[in-house]
Amino acid sequence: MDREIERVLLTETELSERVSELGAQVTSVYRDKLGAEPLIAVGMLKGAFVFLADLVRNIELYCEIDFLTVSSYGNLTESSGQILIKKDVSFDARGRHILLVEDIVDSGYTMNFVQNMLRARSPASLALVSLLDKPSRRKVPVTIDYLGFSIPDEFVVGYGLDFAGRHRNLPYIGVLNPAVYGSAD
Ligand code: PRP
Image (cartoon, rainbow, N blue to C red; front, top):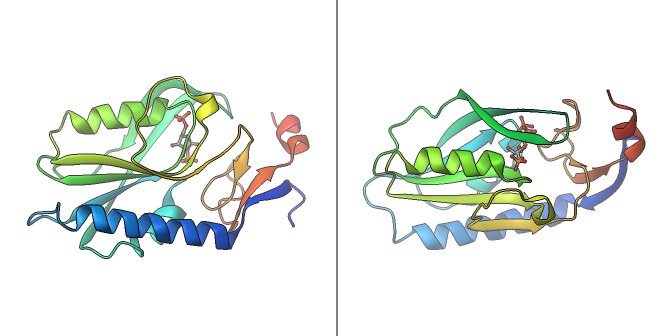
């Protein structure tokens, strides 16, 4: 294993099984809910790119894909609550069924902001699927409609999540070795 990873928190198999369950759940909820317009899955870049790719292949419905990029001013490990839209979605949200796809909800600042922003555009519905949740870190309320795993407050990487740009390509979710984290500027 990579020396920067202390241990595996969620294996490739655990992730794949849970993502498949989430896909089935989304499929069954939206099957009778969608009108003429397909579901639109909006992945939060960059972290959600792996989860989104696996999730949508487990959704058995017409499903469009879009992306949203935000950034938050803050230090390396914690967002500040000031959210900036770097790349907005490229569709008209009015009347659409939107499924936001996020890798992790931590303080909640990002999702709180994004949910409010999209809700103001009058979609037919707005739901959130997040692979991970760190409830102990929450600063502002966020409703997660579909959740993969609730995890303790540890620095996790892999399956899309990074530390200083590294480890997004790991096939599992690992806990970062605190020595690496401690030595970062
Ligand atoms: C991470 C993650 C969420 C956000 C959650 O993104 O992907 O979008 O932080 O944190 P919050 O609940 O405290 O707002 P990050 O800013 O690390 O960008 P990335 O997705 O490009 O890695």
